[in-house]
Image 1 (tube, rainbow, N blue to C red):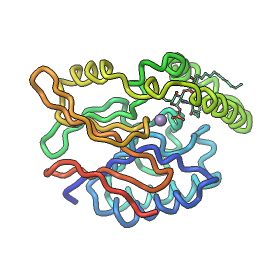
Image 2: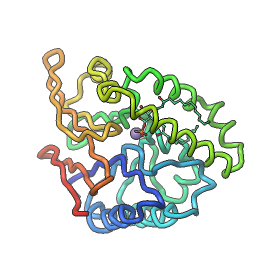
Image 3: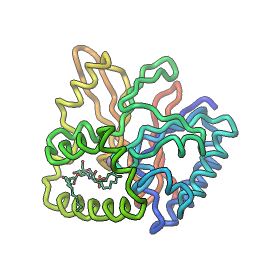
Length: 243
Ligand code: LP5
Ligand code: MN
């Protein structure tokens, strides 16, 4: 109970049942020994609205999260670009806590900045324009008022368009912009630790800013195997889960 865990970019979906099993086992065996679990976005391949709560893999995942919170483990979620439509229905079913993006938390006497990370990809102009449109509350309400089947069809078309655009975008613009990272860190008084996901480029970066040193950890995705970051008073350590 002397540590917290961080994960992101699991992209859980019906077509990859194995990774859902790995995640449920991670919740039962690994996360149940932690003080808290922070999910930094893209838990699901996509979330079309809380009325899809009982479909496919959603139910077992929700049950496993509920089991964890019932045991007294705090579970926090910063929604990502694929599951930002998660709402009250999901929160009530799991007893998790939604955090804003970004969030500054104090863990083991250290300020820790948390984010999904997509907002930092500022060189990806087409994505940022799309992001500001769909994150608008009026847009979300209008979208959610459509029948679930129509929403899913729209999202499937969007995913195809996104995959096609990503295949021709330079790799560099799909990474975080260094100035955007520095600006964000300065806004939060240069915290010693910053953890985010989204880019699927797991790594540890050091930012020297105004005489401060900030360690930035990028979380890995769960495509091939599970991965998580463990934070204790001794610092951060990255771990892989056997496939
Ligand atoms: O997620 P990832 O890492 O693969 O790609 C992101 C950006 N793409 C997206 C789109 C999602 O992947 C698709 C699934 C989201 C479902 C969300 C739930 C409901 C939302 C509302 C549905 C409308 O986020 C990708 C970035 C990449 O990260 C790296 O940062 O490059 O961005 C794109 O590729 C987006 C395009 O550049 C711009 C898209 C314009 C779409 C215009 C509408 C098209 C409608 C098609 C239907 C007719
Ligand atoms: Mn993402």
